[in-house]
Image (tube, rainbow, N blue to C red; front, side):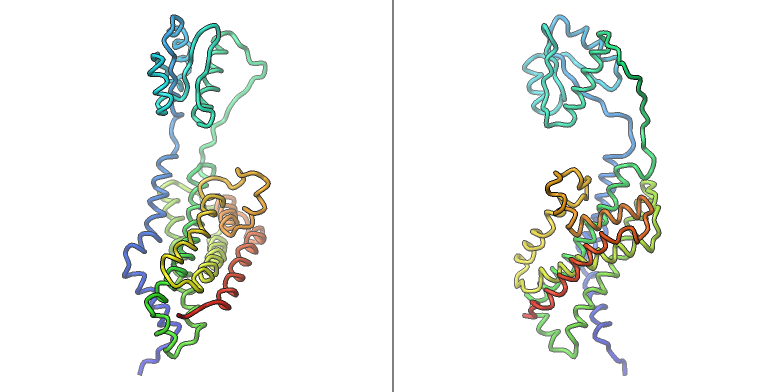
Length: 344
């Protein structure tokens, strides 16, 4: 007679549930790949983008256009005052020039493209007027693998995916089972509570390993991403990060009775980290006054550690601080969840 072990059967049950829900498979494995493809194409290596500039109709407009066309990056045209205002407002033009006794620059200082256009156009006009730069300069464009935006992005997507998987893959599932009264049926079986908790963690760890391998290999094949760190170190960092968010997900779902409640709680926890923790741009861009709070977030620690190991080849020991932050969040979340967890 076959002997059933509760932990093994619960883990297999989680795998079957996952495989039977195509939308879950897509959000866990497919969505990060589509996001990486879209952003990778958007920020791929390409020639310098054109700067679109308008010169308002004036007797001196043709001379100004001729001077600006000496810079191949500047696309300039002569426009009427009404068309210039509309084009600037709609974003078709980054900068408008009004000529007179002096050159008036019209632009939105909150738009990065407008600031770049203002700088480039002013430099072109001043040089055409005879300005001589007192300091000789040169430039070197850095576009090799490891220094591109896509190289920065993929570890951030991996961290974001590990957070989402830990939160939704545990928190949402538990509340869904509670709302359907499945937890009451499970607890009535010859199973320890620890078996149930351990099965949730074990299945999450298995999915984590697949997520890491798929996303990094995709980045390597599709974008030539260089993985400088060891796979053992990468998996170790991902493991600690996954455990951290699994503990938080368990805490968030420990008493929630409805899907709507746990969804709101998880979004409350995750949305600030989506913005602050350096998924799409460096967390260092935020003011120094809030940096202690940002650096203490588990996703910030995970993203920093992943980028250090993947892009710089850092040793696991050098990321002890980040690992400690993630472990603390996970352990505290797990202990509080065990204390407050309700089966019904």
